[in-house]
Length: 231
Ligand code: HEC
Image 1 (tube, rainbow, N blue to C red):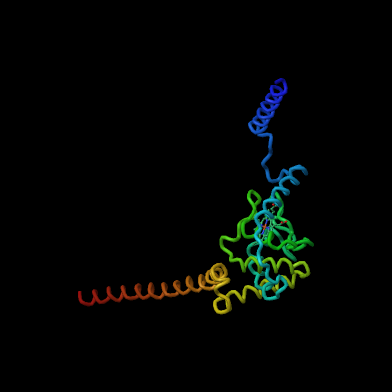
Image 2 (cartoon, helix red, strand yellow):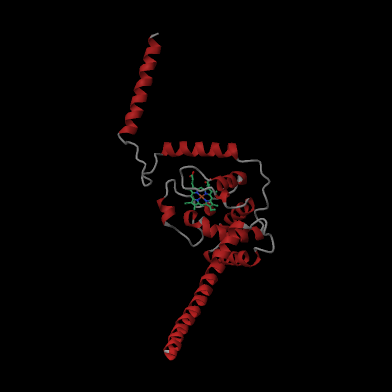
């Protein structure tokens, strides 16, 4: 009986301490305040167990396929490099400011050693870290493409990376419709349209607008002249 009493006192003390800890704002939620080593290890453990429990048994495509590597580059540059960096992109405000700090994936020797887990993370994101769920707007193929790109990036110079990124964008705009449109339709075509189409539309409508305005102006004075003549 004594032990049960003692135990319930402990429980109450712990609960009250926990409440006071939160109530007085002892825990610093600031992203610039780093976690204790033990907290980081614990969170990492939780994350890793959660991911490996959920990563499906996927068929992993050939990640050394040069077509895939090339195809993923433009999307990686547009959506990931600002946090995960790239050859020639040595730092960024997002990379410095986020906690946990986004890892420099292309420098990790063990990147995509467990490709199914890497795929799962990119598709679903990680809660409360800043890592978004990319699966909402990207097809599975696009995600595999980016994994292939990141894997190959470790051996690239900044110049090689830039060339790949630029060449990737060209194939999206030009060939995206014809070749494998079903796989990579939505996102890249939208990007292409807004870049090419957006500009030309606004320019052409401006061009249309101004001549008609001029015509209106020139017609009215002519009308006034006519009026003047009849009067
Ligand atoms: C706004 C910043 C941000 C962007 C943009 C972002 N990520 Fe992340 N990502 C993170 C953070 C932060 C983590 C670390 C999460 C953690 O430690 O639990 C992460 C983790 C990851 C991981 C897991 C790394 C590991 O060590 O297991 C992968 C893979 C990844 N991101 C891929 C990508 C890809 C691919 C893109 C682009 C499509 C991308 N991320 C875009 C912030 C970002």
